[in-house]
Image (cartoon, rainbow, N blue to C red; front, side, top):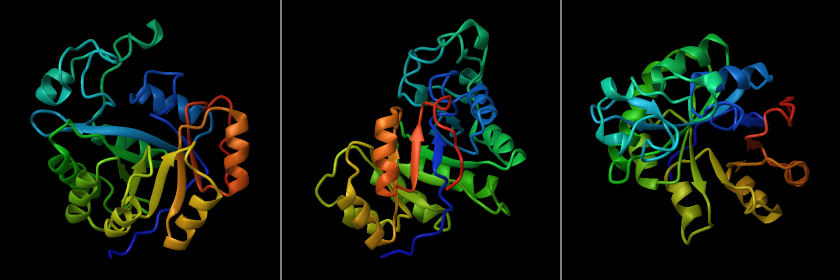
Length: 249
């Protein structure tokens, strides 16, 4: 079983930059999240056709950009010209898709933490994990706190572990599928990040016993947050950056 790298988990993490208050996975969202006092963020990263890691959640472009088709089929030169803000509001019209390198500059200049979800185009799990981990290791070289790499896809995390074993990893779980805890152990995970509805006292205890952080997504209601905080959950990912004050501890 691989050793798990340490990651100083913040209690509150802003989902895709600023949740739904700004166009997700854009620098505008991260600026807004930071303006609300957040010091830790989550984002989704995939690869362009020519291997550039950039921020986008969906496999296709239609929902959050002016583009069409599979994002992973297009080179960065084309993706970089898309409007990733108008779908959200006129205020953000013309907001571009950011590269991971561009986000790294913002995160480091402001002393922030980052959870990078490796979000492969289907069929590109291993290469995406490898390239994202390699770029992340290079971009954060010499920094005190590297990003946490997470994914729903074990193949992506395995490739990330092989490419940059020093980076902390987390397995994302929407269900507790058979063997998921064994896989998290084999991948040397630092954390489990589950749908918040899955997290209970037994799962927190199991995570503690394995040496994993217990993290949850996406917590937007005060009642849910209260329950999870009472359980002692380590990190809560939220869209509601205007509702939850990201105080430490």
